[in-house]
Image 1 (cartoon, rainbow, N blue to C red):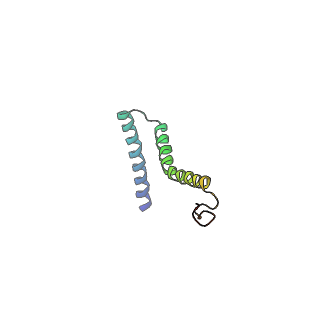
Image 2: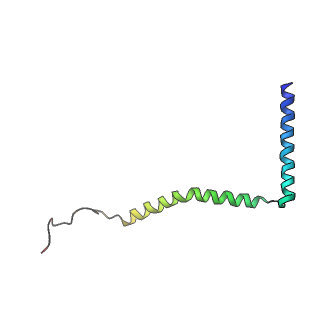
Image 3: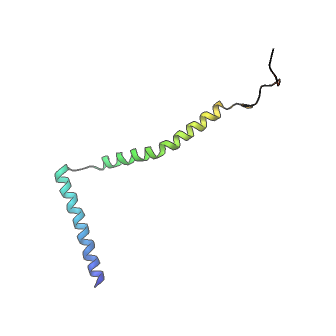
Length: 80
């Protein structure tokens, strides 16, 4: 008996989702998947952007880093 109620509930839920989609299609016009895909790509780009910034900073550090950087000048004293 419980399985029958579960089946009826699932059918009603599916019908409600389909009817709501049709209602929104009439109200807002038929949508395309392109807008959702574009939004997904923009979200993905925002998620990956900080990682790319870190990569650029690491590359920049490697390029500007010189051997012996930060060490005192050779000769040990002031030049006169």
